[in-house]
Image (cartoon, rainbow, N blue to C red; front, top):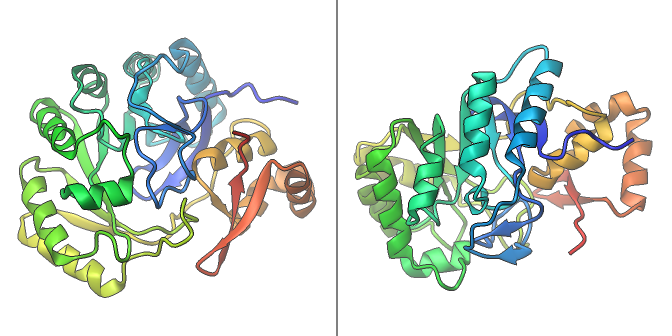
Length: 315
């Protein structure tokens, strides 16, 4: 039986946002970056062209239906697709509709790359919380770790971040992913701190890859580097928190367990133990998972000693 949910998934436990009902407003991995550490895999379509990818009315209806099914409610409805959410020109309309019809706070996780566009800044102005990604303020490092669309320039990206933060009335948080041998030098942290001082985010999260990355060679920065980065950013007057451990809490379902699993892992690879718990309502979890692997819909991969279930997407 097919799921009635095309866009909505979860809720999922978020280390930043509590219990979060996800909205995947893109049809596939469309992004302005192809980050080496991306848990959603390599980018299928690399682009900076905004298009109307989602149906805002259906997004709102699905969110309302999901919230009706959930007993405990959620902390946020979060636009977090398997790509860059601001590439969807209907993003602002969808978020505004969700806020109006549900009263639930809305959040978005963006890689910040398109904030030089006025239309993107306007759309993001609808949200209660915007999570910005800034992995480096140095052009060479930025290109190596984020592998941006060829036409992008880091200077205009950072200028867009500054322009947005000057006019935004909601909460801004920043996430920086630290990858061993790429952006883990002290000079990186000093430059990052000097830039982030200008936008005064509510909090800066220092993260490392904890799920299977797009490129097999990617490794987390070591603990001593994390401590150094924390110290440098604290000296810059920033509120800093580590984002280096697994999320706590249960993954929820708003449709049948198999459809929910496939929707979640399109964006968010899941540990094998969490998958078994989610699939318990579908019968024998191991048998269901074995069938999905046999059908070529999912894969089981290992990363740093843990097994994860990831979505297999036909390109």
